[in-house]
Image (tube, rainbow, N blue to C red):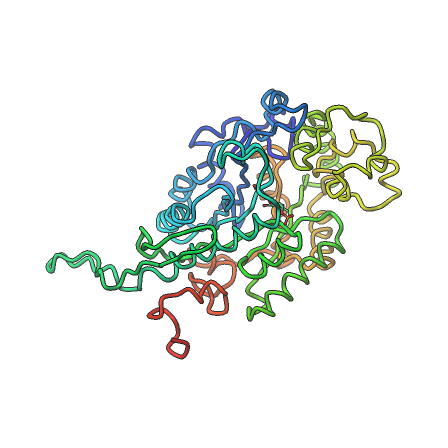
Length: 451
Ligand SMILES: Cc1cc2nc3c(=O)[nH]c(=O)nc-3n(C[C@H](O)[C@H](O)[C@H](O)COP(=O)(O)O)c2cc1C
């Protein structure tokens, strides 16, 4: 996130952490350069458009502890990072619940032009009531499944704008003839749906990818159906490897049922790694990082994500005893009953690896081996590395882990700079023909056989 602490509450106080520089362009440009030099494919930025005000019924603790608050707009830093890099992709989160498709399509087309086809959109439906209160004048957020219904129509609108509105070759730039764009090749999309009405044409001429690389996060039943229809890169998170595998298999099966090729949808999961030159050095580093965890900040975050105010609860009760609370699904991330009986609420929010989890700590071969095992067990295609301190966490990965993964043949070859879609899938910059979004292409853009 473009914020001081995302999931790593309290770590901003660590002397090595530079996250508080997130308001400066130099912070982002420096980060992008480091990631590209370090061999990373994509910088993923989460986002939230509401304050975290469930804990204690207000945002005071979130503000004091900098828990995802303050937060700036992540889209606005991308062009500066693109100017400083050639290969790094960008996956930026924007919620379909709080944007208009017509305007969002223009923003991503703009960034696709400015990045040379390196922009991806992480599509989310969001979860904070505070966002609903301040953006769409509702006391509570729109219901879970309806948010996904809105998201699906939202996608239909932007597919029409990106894929169907401007024909290739519509832009003539004909100085002698005095015609910049051929008006006959720009088409209004005529969308009149349940949630959106967009009769007109897209505002932006076709960009390298047209539709940005589509990422998605959210694995409920509605989320999986949405992912299968739209996502190319799914950010799936579940601390239980078997549950992750089930979700991945389910989404891929649904995608194939929709006519998509199984290799055209990939899966990543998040992982927090503390790595150093050997296991002992990494353990020492993890011990040092743990000293800066902010337990109350963790509860502020847990309250926002679970929708339950945890301020009045005993920190030293085992989380197993909270099973009847409305927060069951969040606490279920620790599935082993033996662990649940032992782990207190304090332990739960204090883990370096996020709720109930710890970081993967070790030297290069320990960590690389664990990631390989995890990928084999779950079927993930890659990892979204969570930082504890910036840029230190990324520098450690680049210095210690990436070379080891490279030795094991786990790092993609770097070719010439190209679009993020082509870099990840090798299918060229545009949506592959089996993607449901291509059904909205203008007939002049469809393969002759299907016109
Ligand atoms: C791994 C993961 C990352 C997410 N990142 C964001 C985010 O950055 N911003 C946001 O508003 N919602 C985010 N979400 C929330 C989802 O968009 C969705 O609103 C929520 O998970 C409910 O959907 P689900 O029940 O399908 O999981 C994320 C969800 C998951 C699982």
